[in-house]
Structure formats: C-alpha cells, structure tokens
Figure 1 (tube, rainbow, N blue to C red):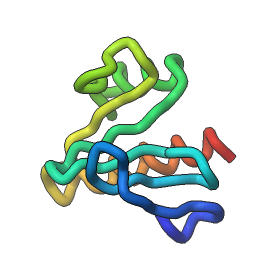
Figure 2 (figure 1 turned 135 degrees about the vertical axis):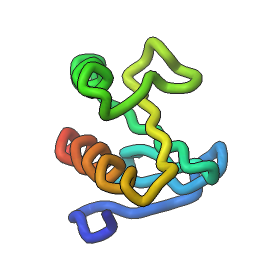
Figure 3 (figure 1 turned 90 degrees about the horizontal axis):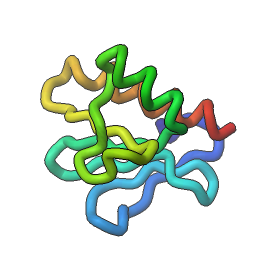
Length: 90
C-alpha cells in the first residue's frame, strides 16, 4: 500500500496501524486483524451485499465497514478494500 502515491501509515488513535492518503484516513488495522475502512453508504451497501465486508463492529449506521483478516487468503480482499477506498479518495 505504501507504493501508492500519497500514502503513509501512522499510529491510529485507538491503537493499531492507520493507513492515510495525504492527511485523510483510508482505514486502520487493529492488532486482532480487524480492518476498518470508511466508504460512502452506497459503496458500503455494495460491499455488504457482495460479502466482501461486514457492518462496522461499532458504527453500524455509518459508512464504516469491518473485515477480519484471519488467514493469508483474506489478504487479497483486504488489499482490494483498501485499494477501493484509496481510489475513491484520489
């Protein structure tokens, strides 16, 4: 992800690693493998219907989604989700 133009990582305010584009957060990864990413509500709904994401574990009615990375096979979907969020920001 750091190879994408304008991206960086930082410490997330609630712990874990935060992925950024410029000064904006793309998403963050908690130490338990939970990836949270913000989308608009239409994109969120598409991701939920397709099974690529789950409703955010706390902010259920927001644009936030959650995705647990528990196996190496989950990495491809995590990269897809991060790339989609990045492309929506550029």
